[in-house]
Image (cartoon, rainbow, N blue to C red; front, top):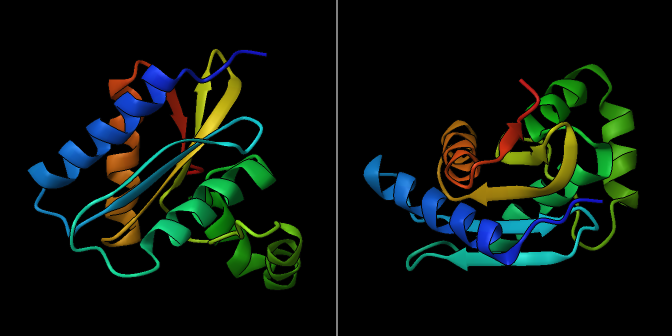
Length: 144
């Protein structure tokens, strides 16, 4: 199993936040989990609302739980609402947030972890997640 290094996770966080500032987004929360679902890195900008870190965690956890980015989970929620609702109950305390912004981190097709971002629109959250993963030299699976 390939591991997501702390250096790579830290790069994802810093680069995603930088991309958010460059785009003038609202304050963001960024959470990076490794393939086991363990917290690898996280940061919450000044001015975020109260539960943004938990929402970011739920996006990352949801992507890992189903093995697809949360954009795909959102589509599946429209098509199979009962299934996604049921999975939300078994996703554990970290939850599952079925909107874009949770992106799988991969290298050579192998899942290394996931990043979840919350604070702006879901589409913008996903955009800066992709920027963070790219800056770390890794690949992203958003579920598009």
